[in-house]
Length: 158
Image (tube, rainbow, N blue to C red; front, side, top):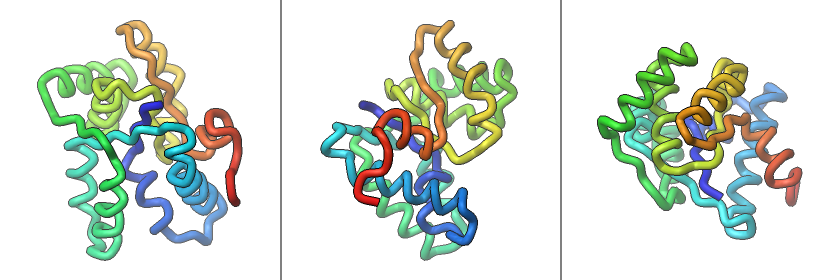
């Protein structure tokens, strides 16, 4: 199973855990990490992901996320193909530029799942998936909690 995690997913365990939603997303991410071998999950990284991580203002948080990225086994480099698909997604799905580049990177990395904590992107998931399906790509856009519940099968070890 090939999975691309948006930068905000990697940040969740380092965010303020006082909000129930953030805590649930952090727990879902940690569960995904804990079942990676069992579920044969391949995590993908990309140039846009590394760019966003480098922009994290807190040095402590940035270094922690950089360490988390080391578990990614494949990297998608920025290319004209990524940028062209991103531009199409930006226009067709009314996505912000960076979100579109993340999704395009996931698609071109042959990910089956794109996980994000960004509610605006999750709300547009049906449209994104329809547009991508029409282009011959099968990508599911989910929040990490939904991925945990629907794909992994609930919380292991929590």
